[in-house]
Amino acid sequence: MRREALQMTSPLFPTVRMRRLRLTEATRRLVRETRLHRHDLVLPLFVCEGEGVRREISSMPGVFQTSVDELVADAERARASGVLGVILFGIPASKDPVGSGAYDDAGIVHRAIRALKARLPELIVMADVCLCEYTSHGHCGVVEGERISNDPTLDLLARSSVSFARAGADVIAPSDMMDGRVKAIRGALDAEGFDQVPIMAYSAKFASAFYGPFREAAESAPQFGDRRSYQMDPANRREALREVLLDVAEGADMVMVKPALAYMDLIRDVRDAVDLPVAAYNVSGEYSMVKAAARNGWIDERRVVLETLTGMKRAGADIILTYHAVDAARWLAEDEAVL
Ligand code: PBG
Image (cartoon, rainbow, N blue to C red; front, side, top):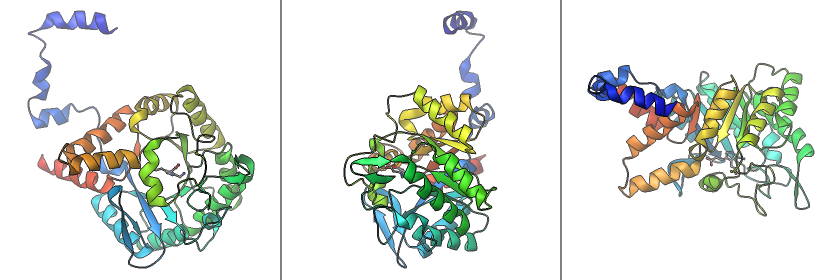
């Protein structure tokens, strides 16, 4: 179509002038096709033991491991900026081979959820469900020899989900990439009376080098091997759709593509293939690259962040999980106040 369309329109110059609708800020806004809004954004937070703890992640300037009290303060700031939701990752005091901290009602994330819901009842608190932050070997499932065993992991993920729901989590977000986990989690939540708690599935999650800084933040790097036997091969597009459709069939309420930047085509594919809300995770490595370049004065952080997040929305994301959420929400509010 493109060539014919061009031949039709280009002879129309000077009648047709594309620049007419670009002349003023008001006109540009009037014809804007994609609108990034602070309500699209979800802020990831890392919670650790202690009180008054606030440790910056060296590879993620502006992102911290915080104790529950400081976490509540960060969540209050996020709410004040207009961000509606947070997603929690835990750094437990101790780890073991079966990730007990993930389904201990007194676990670090469980306490964080209770504190957040007590102080900010309207805040959407999402719980990331995975074993890697809680296992001594750092894998997302139960280890048998050198293998990550799928089916025995499902029960633990289901237990973890129920325990987070019991603590008050508003959304359960499994990120482990075990087969069948959405079905197992849905069944367990329903059986325990949590049939109103939605599941946001990390459906198309790739084995990505862009998670590097996160593993420092969550202290969750695998102690042997890598995650390629459960996370997806970055080269695969059709397989990503199969993963998404399976999660939909198993009962997911929202699906996710992760990472976002190198997978924009898949965000579009998924948006076109399903009617569920689609989330994109603007992951740690994407954040760190922007921060590093901005610190060197090589890019304009504000413009690069808003352009990137707008690109993710244009690709089809309804929800964006991003470490830039609070900054972006403030910048968007400032921009809105201009006109
Ligand atoms: C846990 C999990 C990871 C991320 C979110 N949940 C890390 C991983 O799979 O190794 C990555 C988030 C980021 O990089 O910002 N499985």
